[in-house]
Length: 171
Image (cartoon, rainbow, N blue to C red; front, side, top):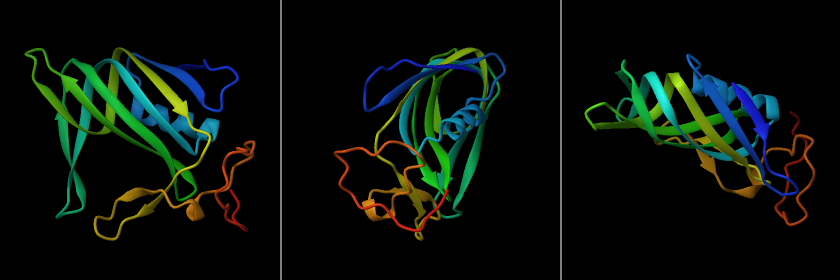
């Protein structure tokens, strides 16, 4: 995985992240989010993969049913976000891939192997997001309530952000 910040003088940081053959973007994006201390971001990507495991969330069992695709596919759309859950960044990404015959398969990105490349554009936002487990589904969902936001983790204060910050919380 190679990456570079490509924005200058903006309240949002934009990164290009390029995955090479054999790399797992799900694991790599989480590693990148941890290394950068991301607390809120969104991402898009295109490229191709040699295999992918998608997930379809079953509300009754509260588990992801795995959809294994073990063939070369085009990444038609990969979109997602980063938010904090249990004081760690969490990646939530959905993926649509196209097969040789034009069929499209989609779901939650669980794991994948890139071939030959995956090009990700990730934009870190100046405000933070936190996830809380939804009792009805068991899923960690984004909570937009500003009173639940994590500490700023050493980042400069956004002068336009008047939302209250929690006290006594450490990272």
